[in-house]
Amino acid sequence: MLQRSTLKFLKDLRQNNNKPWFDENKTQYQQAKEDFESLTQQLIDGLARMDPAMEALKVKDCVFRIYKDVRFSKDKTPYKTNMGAYFAKGGKKSPYAGYYFQLEPGGNSFVAGGLWMPEAPMLKKVRQEIDYNFGEFQGIVGQKDFIRVFGKVNGDSLKTAPQGYHEDNPAIAYIKLKSLVVNAGITDEETIQPTLVRELLKKFTVMQPFINFLNHAQEE
Image (cartoon, rainbow, N blue to C red; front, side, top):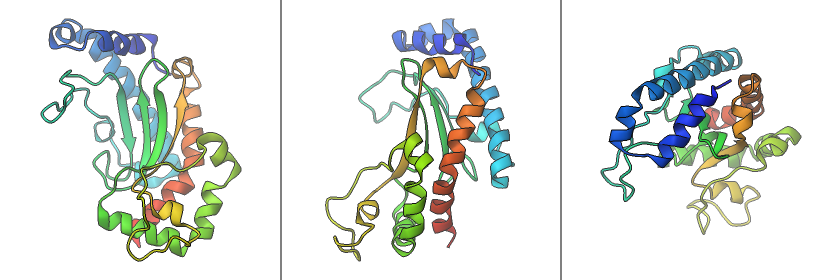
């Protein structure tokens, strides 16, 4: 579970997203950071029991910095108002499909997973894997628990079929996707319950066949 003080810090930061306030509240930030990192370690431990590739992960490999890069952004506020961690073979900078948790008060927390805007060669492999093994993929994303927890696979879509594919391909809706991700919302109240880690890992377990399919495509 996370501490209420961690959510409070992020709520206050949203209202005071500037360096003087952040510097004045550095102690509260450090406490919130340590709280989130503790949760991250528990999730690493749980995921490692599902997937041995996760055993080598360290907290620093997974957690994103709260400091924003504002060089190319219209929004010049210096800090993110969320805390996030990505769990994949090789860590947060890995090209592999993985699992994500974001804490953002105000009903904006969520779990997610999959591939977000992969590089063209990787996306080509995934499209080919879906095309060649569409029955298997349908079985994964059409599974009752998968639909109950995540609904459907999301991502921006091409307007026309990519080169080498036709509109009448049974898998074309998925083949057109530029990202393949799933997500499920987490309420503020759920984030401060003792069952949080267990519930997040349950969702990751439902997601696991989807993640494995995407990663198998990369490793082919």
